[in-house]
Image 1 (cartoon, rainbow, N blue to C red):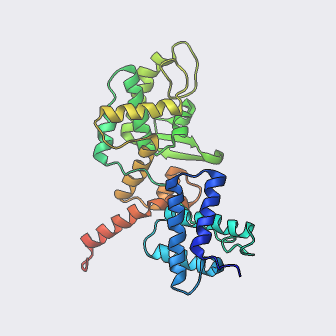
Image 2 (cartoon, rainbow, N blue to C red):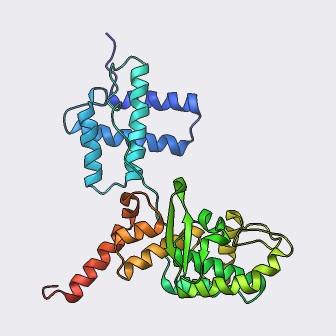
Image 3 (tube, rainbow, N blue to C red):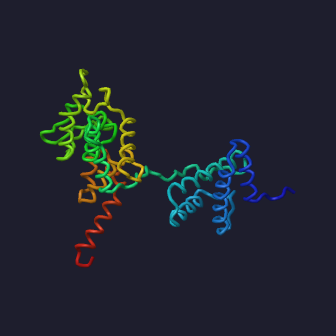
Amino acid sequence: MTPKVTGSEIAEQFLDSLWLESGLSGNTLSAYRSDLAGFEAWLDKKGLGLKNASRAELLGYLAANVRQGLSPRSSARRLSTLRRFYRYLLREGIIHDDPTADIRSPSLGRPLPKAITEASVEKLLGAPGDTTLGVRDRAMLETMYASGLRVSELVALALNELDLTTGLVRVTGKGGRERIVPLGEEATSRLRDYLDRARPELTGEQKNGSVFLTRRGKPMTRQAFWQLIKRYTALAGIDTDLSPHSLRHAFATHLLNHGADLRSVQMLLGHADLSTTQIYTHVARARLQSLHSSHHPRG
């Protein structure tokens, strides 16, 4: 009579198979083992084993993990482990249906950059000097913070898209969608200074319709602007690792902190769908709670 193989033994056979086929590291195999052991322990309380778990049990287990505060990223990793395990069992003929087949991984979303304070933004904006390149860099930083442009939109700005008389800029965003964004007084002033004093020195005899130019008179690139942010972050003594997206994030966060609504921020950021902007709802929610506690008679 063939001895009964336990769930733990099947799990070890699966891990051996992974090691032989994929050469996974010891740490990775340990994580797989831990994920399988956790699910097996949960099933054991229900009188079930790894081999006879159904889709309903898997969904129940994942839901229990969420209730216990497990992050979407960790939930996705556990599901990935179980998906590989049950595909192995299916391939080996141990089971006939894959219980993970119709289960979607949790959406991880895009993590937000660490919030940068208004004081840190002021330090960053004040870092460039009064040289030709410093005037250009200050204009770029002010424009990005004032308008929330994507870095690709910033470096692609053309002279005919600026209207410094009204303080507006016409932006062509993702999908060719156009939007009009206000610049504010400070960014408008810095742009005017750059166009009057610095840009003519950069362009020389070349004709170029781009607003922001390199020292060689060529259009600014995303990579070059990224390096500028890193340099001025260090120069300003800011500990946070900033990127161009940090300024776009600061633009949205600081607007909400000062009373803007999500719909307006959506339009300014150029998000096609409000659901994309809703990553900032925690900011709006915190502000509303603060307003309520400060001004409501029962707050």
